[in-house]
Length: 128
Image 1: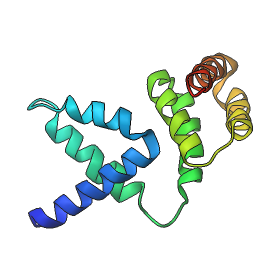
Image 2 (image 1 turned 120 degrees about the vertical axis):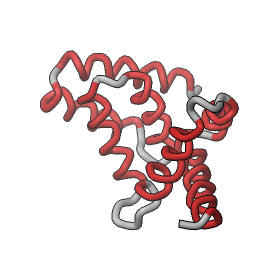
Image 3 (image 1 turned 120 degrees about the horizontal axis):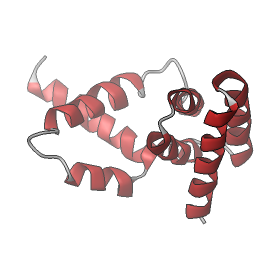
Image 4 (image 1 turned 90 degrees about the horizontal axis):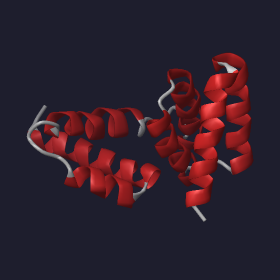
């Protein structure tokens, strides 16, 4: 693949990442790019945020629902908080997020859902 096509995919992914996670968070993350994590960041922006998030098969709102469930199941609280913000940015309501987290209590376990509800409350409080 030529460099121009790669740059277009990278830029499109970075745009999507900013729209979902918020420019402030992404700009801070991009400011921390160095020789150690540069290739990983390129992979995130190109493959994750462009090649997957920008596919036409699912709307962003549904992708957010999936991410919330998977992150609860994996017990990834930091990423869960980011994607709760992203879910709000993608149009999920607090009530819809609550329903997703209730569903995770059944399939991922109550302890995982306890962490998820606590994370959601922290995100909601910081959004005010």
